[in-house]
Image (cartoon, rainbow, N blue to C red; front, side, top):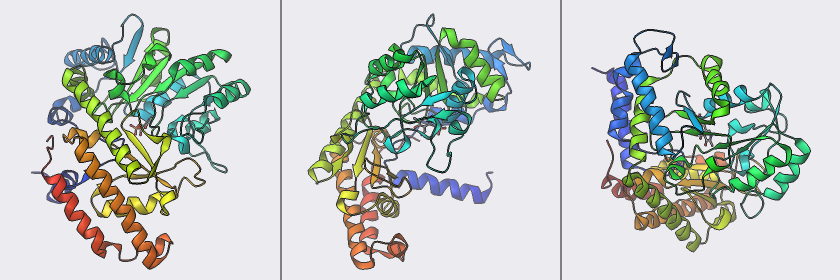
Length: 431
Ligand SMILES: Cc1ncc(COP(=O)(O)O)c(C=O)c1O
């Protein structure tokens, strides 16, 4: 029997996921097969090293597992095994990135990634004025590049900065960038100074695998990814490398950074990569894109300003500052109404802690078989939360502290939560 207290927590989390609307762009609902493999006996085994080169005995079947997972990964991303290899052991996306930096760079070498408030990721060298936030900006010297007022990456400025800063590694990819990347342009810019190019496709790997996004493998030297976002697998990471970097990447993962691989995750990932290569998964990703577009279009119709005026992927970045509220307030009201979103910086924000936007993602609710009409409804729910924020502000003022007083008792939020629960309870849930 599971610890009864824990069992209650588990049940509550299950109900929260099932009864709510999940719009966090980095999340998804994985399948029951993936969950079964995560809870399998593969978790019991230590297997430091690579297939055929382990430090402990008893790895015959683990070798078969990891070899199959590698094969599945190369197949899912349409890669030629003479040109590309993959390490499937990274515990997560951030660790995969650290393994790349430590494998290919010397301490204090220079890196450039998309700035966090422009939609980049912490692990791409993020720091603020008086503080180095990510250790990637402590171990390496980082200069971020940015988007411009259109919401697109400012490639011209990037090209200028690259010439001045002379990074050893240029990183493309992010966590809140709704547009596809121009990898050819990134390569041309990297080639002006002869630096390495790494693509971090954590968010969009499902779109890349199904060829529903531009192909980073055509231009990058290294491609890292998480496996639990649009790819819909377990929480883990992968590093794809051009064959010339094979030993540096593999030795950086183990023994450089990690110890024993999490074989239960590798098994779950192996299964998911098998699913990713099916026509059904391609259909799923097409729907993810269609749904994000429907969400963006409805929000535009409702008078919202959307970063870059739309989306090429699963992400919709909404400016709520123009409506007179902050991302934090909308996030809070959404949470009380059982809608999960996150506050996010939008162009022009000066504070990442109190940003003027929210980030929405379509992958999780598409897994629950929502179609465009559902997403139109979801846009209306979001609009309702913004209107509730304005109502509360009118009554209590704009200070967040005052805004939050007795907010759980707000009748409009209680009514909205009922509607959200009605909407969600009827939807398919994968486990
Ligand atoms: C672009 C990008 N890279 C890396 C990561 C880190 O992944 P993890 O949370 O698995 O460490 C994320 C996670 O959000 C991400 O969006």
